[in-house]
Structure formats: structure tokens, C-alpha cells
Image 1 (cartoon, rainbow, N blue to C red):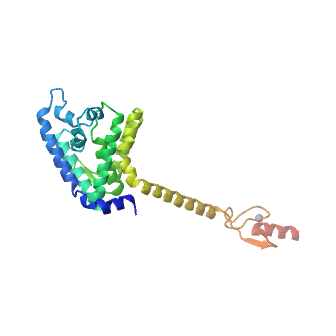
Image 2: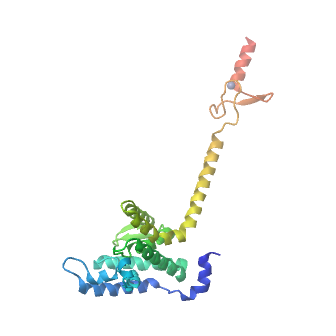
Image 3: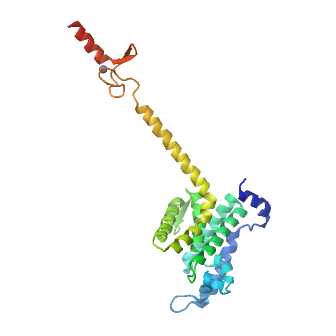
Length: 264
Ligand SMILES: [Zn+2]
């Protein structure tokens, strides 16, 4: 029994079912409120109050901790509807696979780790972008062959989108200072805590299958008969027949030559 199973037994009744609906509703309210605070330069006074900034949290702006999951992922209404729809759908799929408790833990853990390691970046406003990505990556891991229709037209398998998401994270990782690297790793740590063991086992299994295959090919390539006189084998000369004389192997070609030499 894993730690998560034990926790679920004790705290499972506290789980919030259909949590994505509350998050999307919260983000919708925040987005609607933020519409009134758009500045001429494109910034948003209201959203700036929602971003997680460890320096400001330490100065007493505690609400930023709770506002963190409610930051809308985008500003454009059309893309926003699309993003909410996908988030709602993948959360529903994860909940049906895991149950409400595990999904709650996954999301809570991701948010807490992200905010905790945001303390490495004081003064930098942090959004919930990576947190949302960690939810998507969980979905891509569990439902790799699910087909999403990009912009409702182009069908794409979720595993490819998952690889693109990993590529994007890798790009950010390698092009940023160490504080961002650590923050990024912490942001997807929930993914590795949930799937790390699975991934390792799969990799080990794949390695074992590959080793067994290599051994089989090696065995198949090895000759069964080797002529002690000319060195021909049943692999190099499959047309020849091989006989044994006093434990020594000889091919029919060499045998015929021997006979011809004896007769002359
Ligand atoms: Zn021979």
C-alpha cells in the first residue's frame, strides 16, 4: 500500500469532486473582473494582484497564495474558452481514472511546490502556467492515444502534444538561470512523484526485452556446425551437409575432396 493509499483512506472524504468546475468558474470570475482593469499599455492591474510573488507574499499579501490557481491562463476570450474546455475535459478524465482524492492531491501538490520554489525568484511574478502544464502532462501520460482536435479541426494524439510540452519545458530549462531551473523542476515534481516509479519500471522492462531480443538474434546467428577442415558453417554454406567423424565436424565438400585425393 502506498502513502497515497493510506492518505486516501484517512482523508478521502475531504476530497472535492469535480474540482475543475470550481477552478474554471473561479478563473472565469477573475477574468470577468480583470476586464475592468486593463491598462492602455496592455497590463492588467487586477491580474497583477493575483500573480504569485514571494517577495510581496512575505510583505503580507497573503491572498496571492489562494489566488494562484484562479489566474486565467490567457486573455483572449476565444482561446480562453478553448483552454478551459480542455482543462475541464482532461481533469474529468484524470478524475475518472484516479478518483477525486488523487486529482486533488496532484493539483494541490503541484501548486504548493510551485509556490514554495517561487521563493527562489523573489520579485518575479509567477503565473500558474507550469501548474496547468503538469495537469496536461499527467493526462498525456495516462491517455497517450487520445485524439484532441486542435482548433476543433486538426486531430492530434495527446502523446505528441505531451512531447511538445516537454520540449517547451526543456527549452525554458536550458535557457534560464539556476533559480528558474529549480523552480521549473519543482513545478513538474508532482508528475514525477506520481509517475516516476511507473516510468522507471517501463524503462527497465523495455531494456530487458531489448536484451532478450539481442540474445535471441545472437543465438540465431551462431552456427550449429563448423567444418573442422575448411571452416565452413551451416550459416555460411547452408547448401552443404555436415557430418561428424570422431567428434570432428566435416562438410560434404571437404569429404568429397578427401575421397577424390584418396582415389587418385
Ligand atoms: Zn569443409
